[in-house]
Length: 161
Image (tube, rainbow, N blue to C red):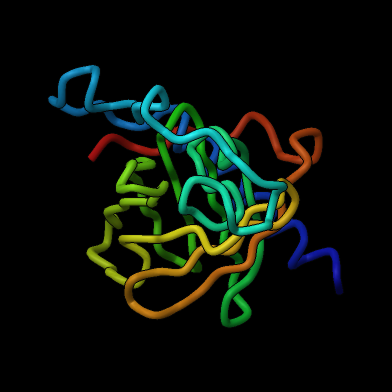
């Protein structure tokens, strides 16, 4: 019985990873596609201390890299960050976007179905194992770093919009 939710989360994690790696391009210049890590302040405290360059938990783009999983309202939430690009599945919603430097790392997403619950997220904390994202619409997700060796492979590609 416990295997089904875990399998669903892992399948969703694989879907998000595949979505991120096959994400549609944009017409934005190359310098707008990746976060400018050269201007991101270096962490000045220990992870999770809340003293890093004005952001709590060392919330720079590099610290967000990887796949993070959890649940919200009993539904799986999977967040994947690769080279500043972000893909998220939350229940039935699939969202894409990027890490933006707004004085601190923010997740700026657009959901394919028009959902707005997770379009702008700020990093509450990130200790490398647990990530807390507060969304502009008021919800908060607590996610755990996924082990890449447990993610499914060979998932089909999503159709182009």
